[in-house]
Structure formats: structure tokens, C-alpha cells
Image (tube, helix red, strand yellow):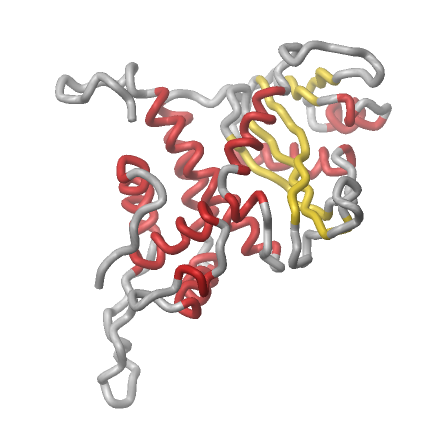
Length: 284
């Protein structure tokens, strides 16, 4: 069977697929339980993986990219199978561990901020958007390291304010232990309240919070890193306009997007520090 045209360059998709395939259990090409022993061969995992990358990058429906190599039903079923196995979550963790080992996560500086996206289909984590005439929207409270590498997110309806989601967001740091002793969390003026310092202190974190009513240039503080990461994520149209009704599926696509972002930054930042003689001088 042929493969669909890639929506991401091979230097990025090939290492992603190599690690993704290592996380998948072995499955026979033909179902041995079929009573006649003549069931159609199982669609290759690489074909479905490429289809998921197309869904993530283009934001189209499963029917739009289904063809003779793979049906829309197969895409959805295989996606759900991989979600139940925790493959997307594990892939993101491996990417973060690799980045930390080779380049180093800047975990002494953490940046948290929310971003609202459209959610036309509604769903478990959608709500009335205050910036889109009450239409259904999705608010993601995203957290990055000091360089902008995505560490995790909490999904909620667009009607949820960023500040109440802060505690659940910083709790995701438990998955990254060991952490530095002194961690500063950079926040914008939306978190400027008496409750925020209390929540950060309870988590042994320091806060650098912009104050309401005070003007500051865009370079002030470290908050722009998470804004850049939101822009990187919004380049994946499945995230910028979320049609997923189930929170598990939405988080799976976010994990896949975060993995791509992390691996891409890893390759580019390590290009000059981990060189081989035969490596080209220019980074893709």
C-alpha cells in the first residue's frame, strides 16, 4: 500500500515515527481469530500515523483524507486504540526527556498563560466564548519552560478564566521530577489577585506577576515565551479550531503537536552543539 504525501518534512517525521512505532504492540497482519482465515490485512500503522499528522496539520475531517489506503473508520479506530494504550502521552514524555538530556529544559523558569480557540462542535471541554459572541470555544491553560518548550496544558471551556486553572496547570510539574529548588512562574496581569501568590506558595513556587493597570513593553518579563508556543501550536489547525468532542482525543492531538514542537526545537538547537563531520552545515 502506498503512503500519503507528508505534511511535515522527513527529517522530522522519521524520528517521530521511529519512536512511535517502538511504543506500539506487535499485531499480526491478518486477524488469526477470523473464522475463515481470509480477513483483509490490517492497515499499516505508518499509514494511519501519516493520516493523523495530516489531520493535525490541516485540520480537516477524517473523511476528507480517507482514500484507498485507509478509511475514515480505520483512522478513528486506530486513534482510539492508541489513546487507550497511552501512546501519545508516552511519546510526549520521551520527547521531553530527550530534550532535557541533550539540550536541557529551563525548569527554573516556568511560564503559564491561557489561549482561547474555537470549538464549533462543542464537547466535554468547550464553553461559551467571551471573545466570540458566545459561540463554543476552548481555553487551554498552557505551561512551558523558560525557552517555550511545552510541558503540558489543562483544557477547559472558553468561559473559564485563566486564574482558576493555574493550580491544576502547575500540578503537572509533578510529572517532571526532579525539579530545581527555586522555580519562578511568570504570569500576565490576568493572574494578578490575592489568591495567585497563595496558590504558588503552597506549591513551593515563586511568582512574577504583571500588575493590572501598569503598562510594560512586550519585552518585560519572560511571558512572551508561552505566547510564542501558543503560536506554534496554532499552526496545527486541528488545535486552532478544535472539533473534538472528547477531552481524551483533544489531549491526544495536543500531545502529538507538543511532541512535534519539542523534537523540532531539539533538532535545531542541537544542530551546532552535537555535530558530526558528515552533517550538513545548515539546519533544515
